[in-house]
Length: 451
Image (cartoon, rainbow, N blue to C red; front, top):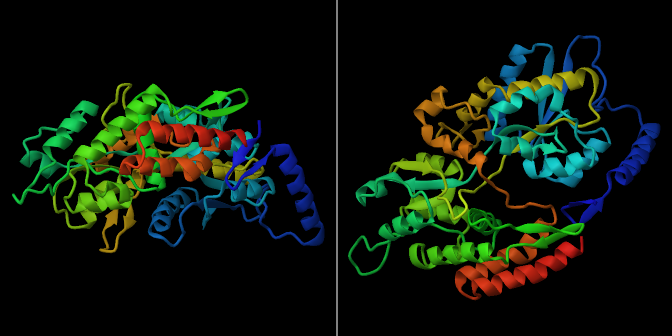
């Protein structure tokens, strides 16, 4: 079956490779070498030059933070020079780069794209080199970079979504700790939803939720669906069908709607993740679902209260947390000294030393440094940073129970054209849970069938 790409492009590896090969042959015939090839060895200087492509600007705070880590690698490997370059997150463009031999040697790739591109023959098999390192990462994470038992994406950095809460507000309300399951989430949020100034109107809410027609509403509700044991899609013949309109899906969305109606601000239908974070910062809500930036946002704004993080509450079938890990991959066209240098770089970036350096963070407007993502290794609890700030460990531990928001490439179009709008209408009360799910199933299947 063809792999489906954003922009409604669907190609077979061999067909696209032939097109690109012909184009590249013509280019080489008409032009002199540009020196951008990713295979072979460097000149006689004894040094090897490679490029590492990241998804952020090299001159951004995040690019500068990564450069610091790369600088440390170069100190330990004086014969290898690494140039950071940036790119847009576009898997079709990346595949074209890779198959034409024009891609940098080491690539930062969103986990969703590793399998898609590896299936098209884009990446080098890293199994032999890094199979022993896999024990340092949760199995669920390693599986995201694996196709047919072969590793094509090595875990690097990322995040999971967890429960971020106002610890000060909890203590003032006499609440001992964060909720462990759905029932406790509702009960805790109910206790924290109240009129604090005595004017007869609720001005503090227990939980901030997303309801705006926006990608955030999809991944957040999908977490609840997975916690209930539901699925987003299911295989059907040689394709996929929408699986949300199930007893588990209905249970999850009805619980979400209950939270919206009873313990969330009345303007939830207009809120994306940024809006919820602002409500949390301003103490309008006591809890939110965020990544590690939910912690640092409070730090950056003067620490108006003590903030903490906990695992997402478990649903009927357990915990499930949305995740966004980035993997490191090497184009299959890389060879010789460049391939060996690239593997050394990946090995270093996955080491405990380099993983700890991720928490040095990026410089904020105030000149202080703040973490922007977390490392992926599971053995960092004893490091200095996590000893001082153990609240960040939960964002790594969430990799044990992943909620996959976009299980297949074609789902991106369903989400954009149908799912987000139906969820918004469910939140605002324009449609019932049943009506929204029926529409998603009907229109979503038409989109999936057209692939």
